[in-house]
Length: 542
Ligand code: NAP
Image 1 (cartoon, rainbow, N blue to C red):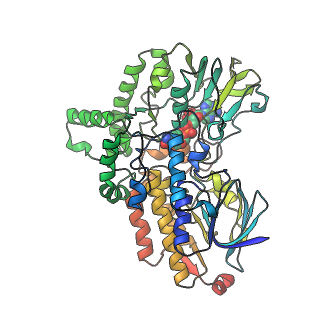
Image 2 (image 1 turned 135 degrees about the vertical axis):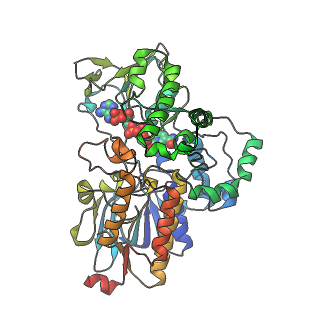
Image 3 (image 1 turned 45 degrees about the vertical axis):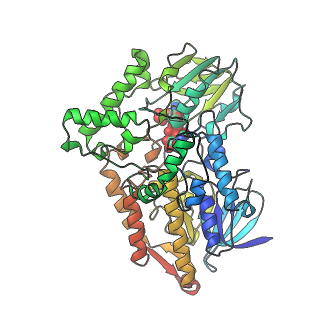
């Protein structure tokens, strides 16, 4: 039987939970579904050893409800996945959301019907849902690159992508383990399991800049102190460059070389992402400034590693790529893990992995590194991946996956020309794609979507879609901002460079969270410029 809804929210993670709450408050007949068997989204799937926030807990929270914020207490500055999952359960229960979420249910197909301005959505359970609004909260990094190497299925031991880590965990005692990948995920795995395994081989392709995390436990005094700052945080975060509590604090040209070093050292000691996102904005635009900051971070890393061979494999060298031009991971004694006798860094930049064989990982020169378990921390088809994997057909037979396989375009990262009444969060061409504290960005996007739907309903309209001109305007602006930065020059998931054949475009809007928010508000004030709202009869005629 077909279920009829006003809105279907796809995903029950940070965005989906809040979106469901808001649309319900609006009075819509709304439900959510999720492929997972419980809430959490990213924090449900990524349960690998050492998974934790790279944002401080006090900022990675919903800020729309002071009591909800203050009734939850984090136990450490950067909490770990089990505690984060418990927090999302707490939010779910407080807002009584569970009764409207169907779990273990993936959306497989969605088709827009022009004669009704509604979506027909099909799920993995065989359900059919007829809904006016199809709101995707499917996550920015939720399409794991699971089939990365030929021969994976021939491996005789356990092999898994970090985002599909076994729920029951793994006992590494006495095991020889291979970890492929040294992004933010691989780093957390490596530093956590190094002392648990018999032998660890880390397959390192591109060296990675890292910053140390300072992660004290929080007692009642510290928790009360951060809660007392609720108003300041809620007032400030949505207007900063990256949705954190801090913002760029210094102007490079105003400081002497000694003062610059002192500012970098101060941010380094903060033990957070501040050195990246809260000191010098010029680092993102000016190659000379970037080179100096890169050299500061490099020196810190080299001093910890000491060994030249390790430095060559693990530390980006001059001319490699600049610090901060893709995601900077935080770490805790990650580099020191390589100083252990049971850990080996295997450089695969010039001797790539060619296949997985029954015994382990085979490299181009024929060497086989024998291991018992393989952890693939090899990343995601970011931004466009989750929706591209669903068979979505918009107006005039347009397929979203096909469109994005040619060029990745959206309007404000929240709608796409040709796909009326499809709303997206965490999608390309918005800061929520990467350069953002996710909760800050996802709250803003879901609130914008709610307001948009409310406006549509109030005015008796049936559909909203970007105009082609509107989308061109946003894409042009996005590209101008992106191309003025060094971000678009470094290949990583930020620009689609981690996947062969994926169209290149910086996925994240690089103008900053505050600016993006302002632009979204301007669009509303201008009567939803960039978009076209229509009534059923107009839309059917269009
Ligand atoms: P990632 O940053 O894309 O890193 C993937 C790693 O796998 C890279 O080191 C990559 O090397 C390597 N790799 C991929 N294919 C390979 C191949 N064929 N051979 C050898 N190496 C290969 O993915 P991720 O670490 O999962 O992180 C993705 C994002 O998730 C992060 O950037 C971050 O935004 C988010 N994240 C957040 C947190 C947090 O906030 N706490 C934690 C984890 C992840 P190359 O660089 O050479 O391609």
